Length: 174
Image (tube, rainbow, N blue to C red):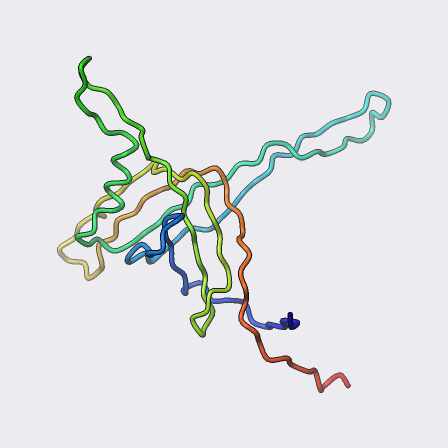
């Protein structure tokens, strides 16, 4: 495998999102919040060492992810949000069904040439917040966006085959 010597970072506007296991990207996603995790610090002090404490890793928390897209006739966000809390009639009255409300997501990032260079799998996502319409303003000149906020059980970077890049030689230092 050739050595890759990319000097510039990837742009943040070349991305697509799809449901895990699927091959079709979700239409119109214009914004994805960052993937962030935080690990708590647990301080520990030995009884015979009163002057210093040691730090150990504790629980890891993953921040929710927000997906935003322009409002269209596509109801995928609304249907997914409705699965978290949907009432249905049963023999004993009304009950809530939580069937199939968790989904995996895949976030793909592309380079300037349109080749996939990064891919992240986000596990067991579910919609904790859904906004169907923004504030409407007759005097505004803007696109109406809907958004969903996703809770999840973490993410992992998938292995991708980055495109082969030309090798650069530093002639100034030689």
